[in-house]
Structure formats: structure tokens, C-alpha cells
Length: 330
Image (cartoon, rainbow, N blue to C red; front, side, top):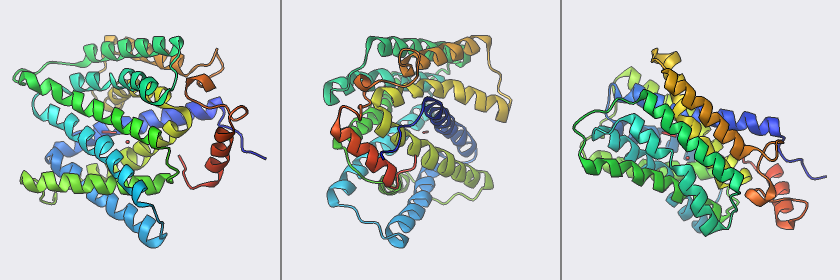
């Protein structure tokens, strides 16, 4: 008997957990960059997590991947982790406010959904486009209520976060197009290994490769490994494989509101009334994207294949129930 697809309440719980874990990266970045450089934190974050994952998956468990799978996962890691994070952190270092960076990052769902239709043939309904538009408006309101522009950023610096936003979109489409059956933890091991190499090269080239000595820096690194990399990126690929590009990308809209809430409870950061209104608009937009005539979850025509009508989808559901996949953040 084939396993049942996830129910709407379970989908909602997984989506909410993803938003919390993805947004945790911004908090971890704040903890780490307060005492060390962004490149140093990112370098040692990926060295540590790659060492553990590679040892567990390919030494202890003796997992084996084809050369094609390794190459594709390495490319996905370079785009979704290395370029994405380096661009976002780099823009802030250049003087662009984190609010503006978050706003540009919020364009990712629109970009991903548009390209998913062209590259993958995944249909985005009018209702979903409306939800994406509402979500973007809500994200804009959230940032407008929180951002305080800092002078001094060169005009070209505002292009940098666009590079990261496009990189995450490219990684999403590559993973979807490749249709690999690589288990999640194997994928993360290769992706994090590629990012460890990338940031090590950058760290050595820029003189920022020294191991951190401050306890807060290592607290931030452990925070980023557990919450952002393993949970955040793991859930991103898990949801993408099962719900489609539009569904998972729309959750990015909730990152800025979730980050504000993190900041309020951890650092006492105030949340303005305007931001609170924006949070409500974001939630409404994402709920519209995820609804299916009021029953929750995108229908088969919106990127989630119907196992009853698609034999390939039925086999994919059966495989999902038997493989080891159990489930890309700042």
C-alpha cells in the first residue's frame, strides 16, 4: 500500500519550521560578525559541517554517489550557499542595509516562479501570482518599517545582493531540472564540501582564514551549522522536492518578518507598527499561494504531481517513503 502524501497540517508545520530555521541564519550572522569577519565565520562554518557530514556519509556509512551526482550537487552548493551567502554578506559589508538586502532577496519567489514556468514547465496559477504579489508587497512594508538607510554605499553595491538572489534561483532550478535521487544528507555533504573549498580560497586570498578564538564566534558557527545549514537548507530541498518551486520560494517572503521576531526576543529589537502590518500582509500572501480552493497545498497543476494520474509521480512517492531523505539560509 502506497504511503499517503503529507496532510495539510503537517505541510503547514514543516513550512513554519523551515521559515524559522531559514531566518535563523540572519541572527547567527549577527552573532558571528559582531566579533569576527563574515568570510571567517562562513569559512569555518562550512569546514566544520563539511568535515562532519563527509565523515558520516562517505566514511562511516560508506555512501557512494556517481560522478554526475557529485558534480551537480557541487554546482548546487556553489550557487545556493557560496555565491548566495557571499553576495548577501558582501552587500552589507559594502554599506547596503540588511533591510534593503532582505527586500532584494524577497524578489526570489517572483524570479523563481517565472523561470520555473520557462525552464521546468511548472505552472503558476493566477491565484498564486496574486499571492506572490501580495507577499512581495508585505515584505516591502516590513522592510519600510524597519530599515534605516546608511550613507556611503557605492551605487554598484546594490547590484551585489541581486547576484545572490539569482544564484539561489539558479540552484533551485538546477536541482529541480536534474531530478536526482540523491538522499538529502548525501546532497548536503557534497554541497557543504564545495562551499568549504570556496570560502577557504576566499579566506586565504583575503587574509581572513585564521581560526576564530572568541567563544561567541564559535557559538555563532554552531548555531549556523545546526539551525541554518542542516535544518534550513535541508528543509528547503525537502520541500522543493515535494511541493515545487513556487511553493517553497514563496516561504522566503516570511524570512524578513521572522527575522524581526527573532531580533525582538533575542536582542530586544523594536518592531514598528508598520512592520507588524507588513507581517500580516506577508502571511496573507503566502497563505494564498499555498491554498487550494481553501483546502491547503498546491494542486497537481501547480507543481505537485498527482500520483493517481501520473505513474512516475506514484513511483516517486513510493521512493520517498523508502529512501533516507528526511526532511539551501543566511
